[in-house]
Image (cartoon, rainbow, N blue to C red):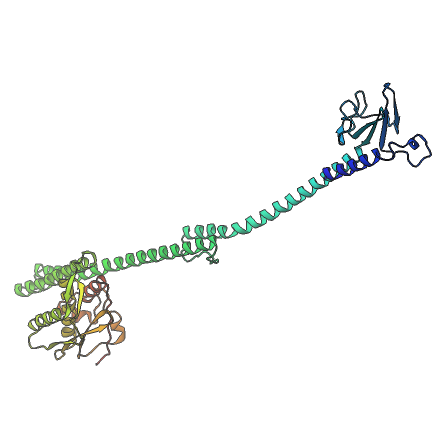
Length: 406
């Protein structure tokens, strides 16, 4: 803007130097050729004299003016009351130097005003930008505040809280998705740990109860004999021996369950058809006169990766359970099938079956359909629990389907 204004002043100075500044009419006060009020014309003669037209009482410093050169900016002459800035041009002709000067006060005032307006506008723009930036940053930080509140709630124990799901195209959305995934896994781990802790409490309670029963019987028979209420030593010793065997079986089953859940598997390629035939033969030997058959419905040899001894235990438990609880006439069939890459082993019997409410609980620890009958037969209620643990440790699943009377 300064250059534009000064270029206009320079153009007027050049035009005046070639026009009215040379005219003799400027000496006539009534002439229209007199210089404008904000212009000063100085005539310098060779004898050192000079004439000033429109003398404002303050003149430009002429010692720095280049005669014949382009317009230039100079200060006021020494001794001036005000340090006014001038735009000056000088030309020498016929021994007379004509100097035309214009006071730049109006232009400088205008430039100062424009600068102040520009400054005010800039400050307003900066203020608006600051407010806008504050709003944008506050909006951008809002999701992070939600994350902070959610983290605080989770730390306080509320594992059901989740971070709002923002679009995953944004970094905050990706962070929210990662946090929700982590929180979900954390909740699953905590719930699993709580479930296992509850199962352990139940297990310890059930084990204590199961051990307490034979111990109470042993103590009762001992006190009975000691008090002289019976002199049948054979009866007392027989009962104590029976209860001791029950305790021994229970402890062995507890150890078996612990090993099933904690021991490492010796994984090898296992032929399930060969294994099933071997287990069926062992079951027929343990239950003389009972029928146990094996059917192979696969088109090839059904092999899996597993621990042969553990899988043998699984099949033997299932077959023995069917022969024991299916009734004296029940027969057991082991059928091998393929379901995609998986091998399905179906152990079925044609015994009396069980109601649905019993079938739902057969894999629970210490569960017995008839507690008194099972204790009498020596069962601990851990056989199918051990079976389920071994199957799951192999990465498999086990289910039961039965109808009472079927």
